[in-house]
Every structure is written in structure tokens, then in C-alpha cells.
Length: 243
Image (cartoon, rainbow, N blue to C red; front, side, top):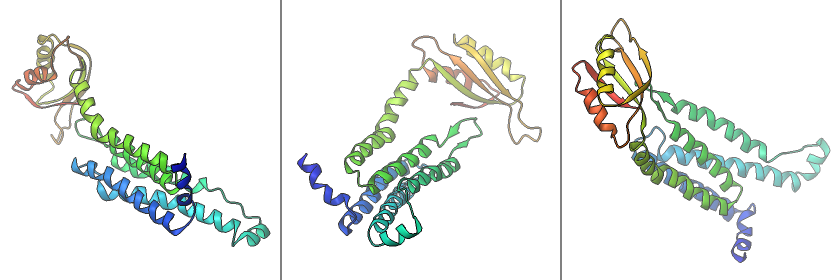
């Protein structure tokens, strides 16, 4: 409790408090961005840092305007009936970050959605910046650890779980539509149950080959690589990807 009371000075609008919040925003955003940049994601070190820094600055501006309207500008604001809501600027940050995140999310040629984690990370980084700007230091420490765990440690756990999952989707490209029967027969020969097939005939100009997404269920103990290896061994199969 004593430590929290010592933070009261840094929650006020003063130069040390502003400096701490800006440095903390750059540090937290940058550290998360480094991890994403290491994996060659669309948004990396500088993007995360700028998002978090901008969000923190937005809240500081809101608090600054509120402080001025209650002190130096008090008489003038009373005359014109000026009212301010410090949460409104922060709300616009949350809305605005959606446009940035939407530009990162793409659907690849393999019918796979990419960029969701990066977009979610940017949104969480912006929210963390709002908390930093508000001087909510205790929450920032907790959220930073949780965000870092989500993007650094949990993907390894997720990959291990997915590897052992019995349901999977396989994107397969082949030379002609007649090859679909051979692929289905190959999958069934592995003892795999097919419960959905989504076929794309491709384009006549051959800019996109015929392809299909097979939703299948493996039998207990069967590995994903075993099924994919068997399918890739077919002569007319050109691409196979787990999505």
C-alpha cells in the first residue's frame, strides 16, 4: 500500500510523470514489437512503439485539457459552458486502431487468414498505451507480461496442441480437376475421415491452379505429417499446406 501511495506523485500532471509515461510507452511497445519483428511480421518494433506511444500521448492530452479547463481556463470555460470528457479521445484511439489492424489482415492464396495475431497485438498495445497515459502503472505491468506471454510463449504451446489435434484442414493444389478423386482415395487409404471438401476450379488462364480444401479427422495417434507426406507423393499434387 505504501508503494502505491508513492506512485501518486507520478499520476499527477508534471514533467517527471509525463517523461516516465512516454518512456514506458516506448519501452513496452518496443519490446513487444521486437518479438513480432523477429518473426518477420508486418508490424514490428517501430510500429508497436509508435502505436503505444501515440495512445499514451492521447490520454495525456485528454488529461492536460481537463487540467487546464479546471485551472487556467476555468473562468473562460464556465462562460462558454465548455465540458470535456477525458475518455472520448481514448475511445477514438480504439476505433482508429481497427483501420490499421484491418490493413494487416489478409487472406493468402492458400485460403489461409494471416495477420490476426498482429492486428490483435496492435490493438492490445494501443490499450496498454492508454493505460500508460492514464498513469495506471500497476495494470500496465500486468498487461505487459500477459501480452508478451501471448505472443512469445503461448504460440509454442498452441503449436504442440495443434500438432496433436485430430481435426485439420489441408489446402491442396493439383494439375486437373480429375485428380480430386485420386487425392480423396489417398486420404481414405490412410484411414482418415473426410467430412468436407471445398473445391476451387482455378482460372482458365492458369494464373491459379485448381485446388481444394479438405476438412478431415485423423484416427487416434495419427500424425499430420504422415497424411501430408502420403498426399504430396501423388504425381499430380503440386502444393499441400495445413491451414
